[in-house]
Length: 167
Image (cartoon, rainbow, N blue to C red):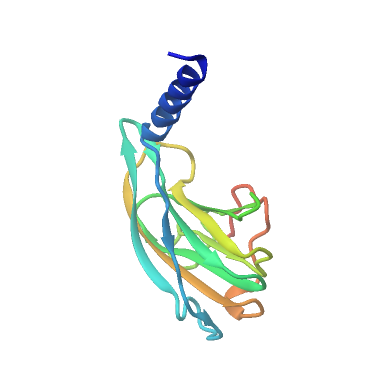
């Protein structure tokens, strides 16, 4: 076997191993309408998800949501079994996160990015807020709005680390 073939085989084996180690695969979710309605979560899409505990290793729920520039993305858990947190990563790597910032339930999370400054897919992760092993179901609402919409008032600060809003 030539050195180049051996290198390719080794790289392929490492890549396969990395991808097969319980990797969470993100699903693309698209809310086609950019809404101008003003009541909380109006015109949003509703998704059910589960955060799983695989052999004491947390398996987050992941998805990707789309936004154009100068819009707002609103992501809110409206029910959940455990204390979860939402983390959103913009196409350039900027992170937004929130734990317990929703008024829907005492442990629910809310991330609002307004205005969005990049066209593309934003990676959303829902996982246990404190890194503990847990399993549980949740409901997530995802909406796209015009950037000055009341659904986007007081947007989540970029780089926010475990931002909580007092109830």
